[in-house]
Amino acid sequence: MRPFLLLLLIATTTAFGADVSELRIYELGKPGADKLSDLPARYAEAMDMGYTAEMPNPVFRLSNLAFLPEGRRERLDLYVQYARDLKVHRPGVLFIHGGGFTGGDKAEYRSASVSADLARAGYVVVSCNYVLGPKNKEGVWPRNIADCRDAVRWMRANADALGLDPNRIAVAGGSAGGYLALMVGLSDDKTGPGGNPAAKVSAKVSAVIDMYGVVNFSKHGRGDVVGATAAEQKAYLPELQCDPQDPAVLILHGTADTTVDIAQSDAMAKALRAARVSHEYVVVDGAPHTFDLHPKGKGWKRTGMFAGAEANGSSESADVTAPTLDFLARTIGK
Image 1 (tube, helix red, strand yellow):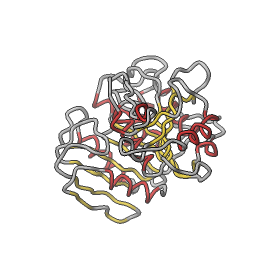
Image 2 (spheres, rainbow, N blue to C red):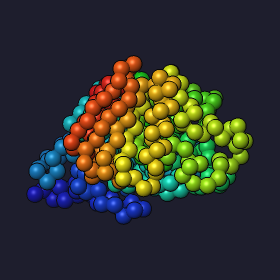
Image 3 (cartoon, rainbow, N blue to C red):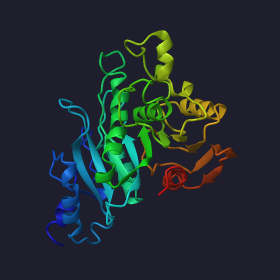
Image 4 (cartoon, helix red, strand yellow):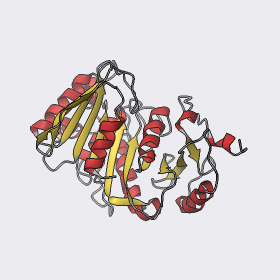
C-alpha cells in the first residue's frame, strides 16, 4: 500500500474522543486550514492520488473554515463527494450537531457519519459549530440559532466556490441540533429568533431533517430563554411555528430513546399535520438516542403527509439511509 494511504484513514479525535477512521474521510487540508479559496487545488491534488480497497470511494473534508464575524472561534467543516466536478452546482445540506445546547462538536462521530453519507450521495455538506451554553446564560440564546442561520448564508454566499445550487439547501440536525434545524427551517430568517432583518443573503431552506430533536426544551430542561418575555418564549417552540408555507420536514426518532421523549416528535408531527406542512415521520423500533443513518433497531415505520397525500411505509431494517435520501431527492433533488 502506498505510504500516503496510511494518512487517508484518519482518526480525528473530537471532544468525545470519537474515531471516525472507518467513515473513509480524507482531510484536504492540515488541521486549522480555513481557506475556501484553496479548495480547487487541494481537491485536484487529492484526485491525483490513487485509491485502493483500503479507502474505496472516500469523502473529502476541508475542516475549520471561518463563517462567523472576526473574533468568533466557531468553525464549520465542508464535505465533498469523491470524483465530482466542482463547477457543477449540486444541492446542499447543513448538519447541526447535538449536545444538549452546552456541548458537542461539528466533527463528532454522528455528525461526521451523516455528513459523509450525504456527501457520498452527491450533496454538498457543511457541518457547523455554534455558540454553546445553558438557556439562562446571557448571549447564548438566540445567538445559537443565529449562528446556524449564518452557516446557511455562508453556504449560499459561497455557492460558486462550493459547487452548490443556492436554491436547493436543506438543514438537518440531531437532538439539540434537531431543534436548531427546525428553528432555521420553520421560523422567519429575518424576524424569528436569531433572525437578521439586515442580512443581504437569505437563510431560508427548502427542507428540514429533525433527528430526535428537543422540540420543546421546556420539557427537556429547566428555565426559559434569558431576556425573552413570556410571550416571546412561544417563538422558541418549533411546534408553534408551523404554517403551510414551511419547507417539508422529515422526523427520525427511536422508540428506545431515554434522553428525548419520543412524545416530543409525536407532538411535532401532529403540529405539522395540523398546519398542512408536508412531513414524514419515521419511527425506528428499538433505536436509542444519538444515532446516525445506521441505527440499531428492529426496523422502521413511516407516517405523515407529503404534497397532500399520506406518506406511509415500513422496513424490516433499522437503517434510515433510504428514506432520508428519498426525502432529500423529492425536496431538493440530487
